[in-house]
Structure formats: C-alpha cells, structure tokens
Image 1 (tube, rainbow, N blue to C red):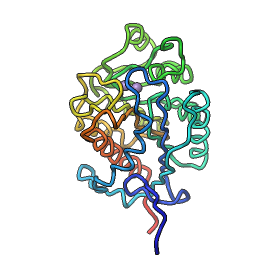
Image 2 (cartoon, rainbow, N blue to C red):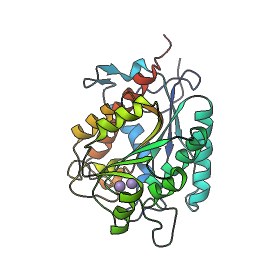
Image 3 (cartoon, helix red, strand yellow):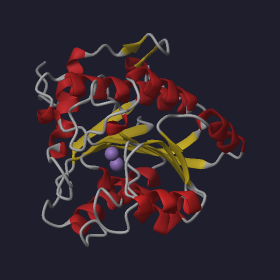
Image 4 (spheres, helix red, strand yellow):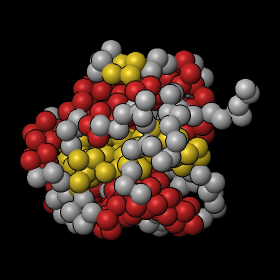
Length: 293
Ligand code: MN
Ligand code: MN
C-alpha cells in the first residue's frame, strides 16, 4: 500500500502515543545578530539524516529500537519574537504535560527560552546545562531583551543563581563574563568539570534542560553557523560530553544554530545529524523508551 510522503528525522517514526521523546522544529532566526539562516536548520537536519546510519557504534545502540515522534516544524511568526516564543512555550508545555520529553530543533538560540519557561513551571528546581561558544548573557542586544545573544540571561531571570552550567564558552563582552562569575557556573573553552557536575545532579535526581548551541564546535569542522567562533571543541569532544550526561534526569533538550546554507559542502548539516542521533540515543536509552514490538 502506498503511504503519504512524511519526512521525519532518521528512524523517528513512532506514533505520538508510544513515543517517550517528541522532536519538533523551531524554524526561527529573526533576532540573529550576524549571519541569518538558522530557520532552515531543522528542515535540513531532517532531510539530510537519510545519509546517516541509525546505528551508533559509539553506543552500540540503534535508533530503530526506540520510540521517538517527529512533529515536524512549527509555523512561527517571524516578525514578533514574543509571539513565536508563546507558541513554542505552549508546544513544550503540551509535550511535557503528556509525560514526554520535548526535544526542539532550532532555529536560533533564542527559541530555548520557550521550553525553559514551560519546564521551569513544571519543575521548579530545573537546572540548565548549556554548551556554546557564546555566553548569551547580555542584558539586551542593541536594546532588545529578546535576542539570541541574551537567551541564557533570560533563563537566569527565571531560574536565578547557581542553576545554569555553561561549557565551552569563548566569546562575550566583559560584562557577560563578570556576570557569569557571580551568577552562573561557567567553564571556558571546554568541558572540564562536566563529569563532576553530572554526578552531583544525578545524585539528587535534579531535572535538567540540556541546550546545545552547535557553534560550540570549532568552525573548521562546523562552519555552517551564523556566528562562527574559532577555538571550539571537536565532534569527538562534544559526543563524549553528551555521553557524560547519560544518567541525568533530562526533562527537555534542544540543538540549535545550524545555518545549513552557510556551509555549501553540507558537512555541518551532516555533523548536526550525527550529534542529534547520539543525543537522542542517550536520552532514549536512559528513559527506556523502546519501541513496542
Ligand atoms: Mn547561543
Ligand atoms: Mn553561540
């Protein structure tokens, strides 16, 4: 029998009912400070994932064994960040309310604010683990409080001190680094300390939101992003860091800032697909969300 042509991320073809993890795209890039294009990120990841194996030799796990639902891209208002965030917040709240993990594909990094708002309501002791080249701690960017350069500062407005853990940071203005010294836990340049942090959060079964800005990767291997920043981590370092989050109580996640058209070779998109596969496998295995046979 012929079936409708529905494109999902690699092997993420479970029904919503059976799925423990729900993927959804947030194709929004209106506050991008430098080179736009991340609105095409989620669609490119879905489309190019056919070139990737569903089996991970790193984890000896296969995505075909797990129940992940892909809801496609959400239709968002490009001209009004507040409206876009409101729609994304409702989506995250609905998925979390159904007992599933909301997993968002950006889009620019501002979209992270929406699921964090929704999940902080459900989990008042929420922590954030943040991988990024940029601190994203500006109070405003050219007067705009809602900007991808301010997203973690807006998350701090909600969560307060000591609950935001930043890694790989190598760019920001002086005030952002001074702010971090007082209010967040920031590891510059790499993932040092992530293992110890994970152990502590695991012990207390702390709910964690994991946000991965793909520009934490070095632009020599990942040039397809709007604000490339030299001196980043390798793919192997990033997947190793993802592995260290394996036993955490992750209640929401996102991968953001792929701008596929800025890397005509397609390598950045292919790498984003692989990062996503590894993170999905870690989350799915931890949550025991095997497919019904
Ligand atoms: Mn960012
Ligand atoms: Mn960044």
